[in-house]
Length: 165
Image (cartoon, rainbow, N blue to C red; front, side, top):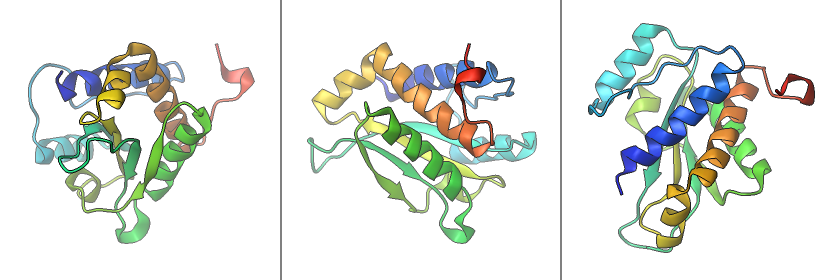
């Protein structure tokens, strides 16, 4: 199981949800071609994106029982803090996703983007039970729904009953 397959599936689901709200979504990965961190941040900065969200799956060599979604943001000037908090709050509100905590480690893509950015580690592939969930399209949709909701909240477009299809 390749991380990129899970990341891409959830990214595509988030894209569909946001486009339904008339939000233009640009993905750094649209083909099976690797893009390094500098290229990703350059793409985001050059396109003038309002937000940058990077989706990944985590792993732990020390603890195969580690589980839960983590969200990172740049601590310098709190750039991206609101975005990360909104994603984490939406994830917690879903009631279906185990969470860990917000983190402020120096992740390249959140540090070198010009706009608010968050890096989401959706779960641990090193945990067999969590990996099984991450591979299910129904769980991927739950993740996508929560991530999209956090993005919408950050843009001031949080969903309400009248806005849903």
